Image 1 (cartoon, rainbow, N blue to C red):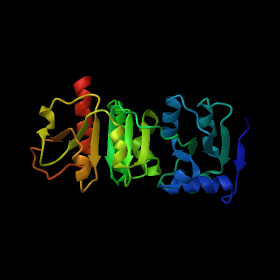
Image 2 (cartoon, rainbow, N blue to C red):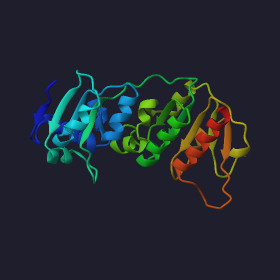
Image 3 (cartoon, rainbow, N blue to C red):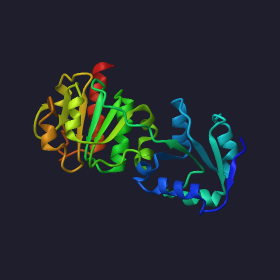
Image 4 (cartoon, helix red, strand yellow):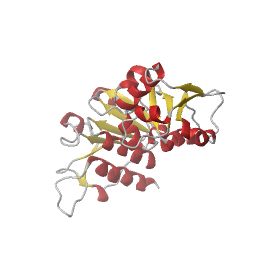
Length: 255
């Protein structure tokens, strides 16, 4: 398939790509996500998935040609300068994929899960998705007030983890009643120390707001409340760091 050549910044596709790249919530309206850069594009392909379209700078055509994309994938070529204008990054990438936003599925009652309770930092959310995928968790459930899971910043921080997980967002606490696995939560002042606990598997970890932690109503639902030992005496851990410790503790128990 011969590529389309686009030269105008006022082209309808260019306007849509700019919105997807720079507006954290645009994907919800447009039903598509923008995967910017070599790493995210290859992460999608590694999962056996194909994008709806590949958009590339003129200088990147030879690199993209080596990826073996399905012939049905739309191919669009932009001048290098126009490609750079799409990005919100200091060092814009030379290529990206337009990918259909995956449909939200029903909550899987038995899946090893991570529940995000109003986490607002996109970097933390993306990092937690990456840890969840690495540690064998299959489902991430984001309550209302959590950073948009498919926003450009969360996608970059997730480094491709999105494509290994079932993601649901905008949930209410009542929808968590569908889960039939034990709920685990951390608290700085109560519960057994994590490294001493016998953790159930599968389970669902409740991970809370960076400053406020897991909400009290949600914490009351937890089957286990656990503490992370901090012999150095710091007041608290970064949310993503604490999540990685907890998810690894679960994975280590079933390895």
